[in-house]
Structures are given as structure tokens and as C-alpha cells.
Length: 168
Image 1 (cartoon, helix red, strand yellow):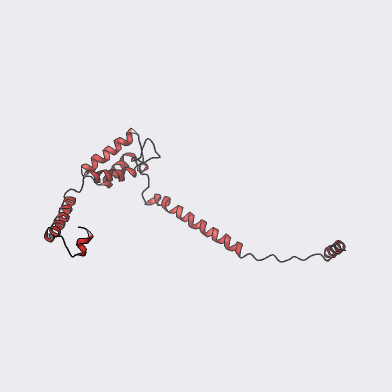
Image 2 (cartoon, rainbow, N blue to C red; image 1 turned 90 degrees about the vertical axis):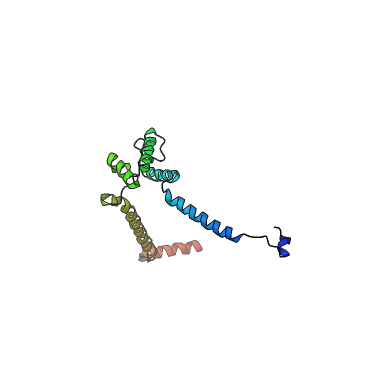
């Protein structure tokens, strides 16, 4: 429909019942599909990516299993995928790898016990550094001007004589 039709009051026929009912039924259908299949292929792959991003590759050691190109990392990704498709929770899959390799396999240590120091000490260090910087700057800003020290009268007289000689 162009603008002339609108200006003359022309309106195209609408089927309101179809639009309202169609939109509602489409929304219900999408909701049922999403509830009926919670582990679709894309969600499994997302979970595999999330879990393997938290695990350290035993071969590369500086890369996560998700980012490592090694054969061992590929096998670990496949194992994570198999366990998720078998119905295990992501926590159970991570627990399996921790049981097999120890806590070293986790890229980020758990936030409990002695490992809590790894999470807390950097912030405490930054806070302590900020306090030290604040104290130094405060002391520097508040430092009084040095008072002129007492000058030996004989030295002062000699300086005055030299200045008088330079002026004449």
C-alpha cells in the first residue's frame, strides 16, 4: 500500500484473528520445543566449551582444553561431550577430571581453604599499595617549607661586602 491510499482513507483488509492466534500459537510452540529438548546439540556444545575452558590441557599447560590444538585436548573434549550426553552434570564432569588429574587441572583454583589466599591476596596487596601511596602523597603535600637556618654573622657580613663591591 502506498501513501496515496492512506491519505484517501483506504485500508487493506486485515485478518486479526489469524494474526493474534498465529502469534500466540507460535510462541507456545517455541516454548514447548525449548522445554521438550533441553540438551540440543548447540547447548551441549556450549556446555562443552564452558567446561573445557575451565580445564588446563595436560600437554600445553598454559592453554585451556578448549583452546589447545593437541590430540590429548581433543580426546578430553570428546570425553566431556560424551559424559554430558550421557546425562552427567557439568560439576560431575569437572569432578571426574579433578579426581583423575588433581586440582592442578583446573585453570582457576577453587575459592576455598588455602586456595582462598590466591583470590584474596592480590586485592589486599592492591589495597595496601593504595594506602601506602596515599600516605606518601599526604606527607609530601603537607611538608612545611624549610625555615631559613641561622646564618653566621661573619659570613653574612662578608656576603654583603661582596655584593656592595659588585654593585660599585
